[in-house]
Length: 264
Image (cartoon, rainbow, N blue to C red; front, side, top):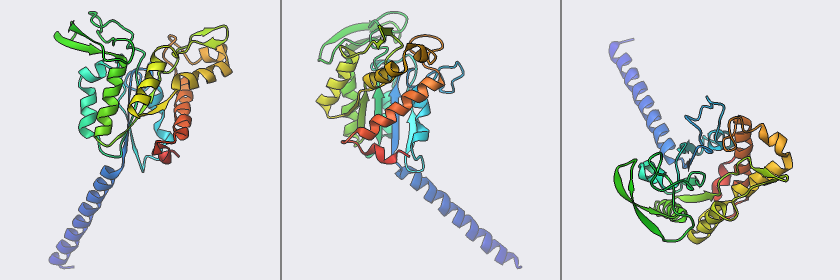
């Protein structure tokens, strides 16, 4: 075969390869993305379970057809609805967010902490109102205006919606706190405020606190205890898998959200 003919076929092959790669990139970019944000109950450590603790967000991707939707768990331990924002983590997601994407939000476990302590300074004002407080943040060494838990949740929802994305608020998962066979629930604080914020903003809502608590009560305290190897907040892989399954079951029930069409 002449050199010119070989060169021609090689050029054609490279062109077809380039077209194929370009088509793959475009296909990937057209897929919607499910972003998950939250604390260590959603993603513990680096998400690998190296400490035998898992968040439910690390085990949810297999429930979805990932050829049609990308799943990105951006949750990180120790964060509250406030610190996830002030650290710039939410802004990085916003910069990538596109119409048709989804954002699942679950905060609350760390929002009850102090506003301006020298250890974490991660708390938010209780409730859903417009109250605020000027503080000096000893962690960032800057002045900061701190708002209510509901204020920060509204910010997530409103900014996601402004990008054409669909927001889903989850009430925080329950801890392993049983009393007389019943799980302590968050129906008078963070669970209630999450529900109220979802209703006020038009976001979808998953009452994860009550849904998981119901399942824990069915299983009983002895079985549930096996899900919590270190403390009453962080689950092992079995517990996280149970919680992820409940999240998916609740997603299927949402009438105002079509995320369920991507579930396997």
